[in-house]
Every structure is written in C-alpha cells, then in structure tokens.
Length: 64
Image (cartoon, rainbow, N blue to C red; front, side, top):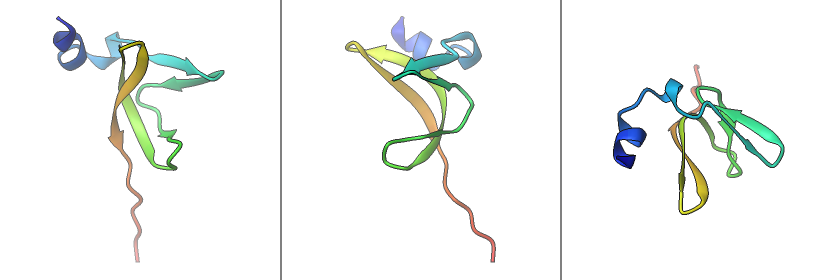
C-alpha cells in the first residue's frame, strides 16, 4: 500500500508542504539543500520517523 502512495498517486493530492526548522517547503518550488545543490521537491514522505522527499535535481545552464 505504501508503494502505491509513494509512486502512483498525484503529488498534488499528497502533502503539499512541510515545515522544517520554522521554514516552509512546498512541492514544485525550488529549494536549496545544505550541500548548496538546488532541487524541486515533488513528493514528501516519512520513513522511520524521518521526513524525505523525492525531487528533481536542478543543474546550472550557461550560454556562451
């Protein structure tokens, strides 16, 4: 059942926001990780009492 929630449901129907250290993080909005890597979370989930996200990595693009 958990696999269905994590992989098959529309992310917009799941948890749209989490609060971490008094800061809100929303799905489909860019976030900056502690490693300085940027990502766009599209799904939040809990495992073993910890919060995790499925996210798309953002890569810088340069034009010459």
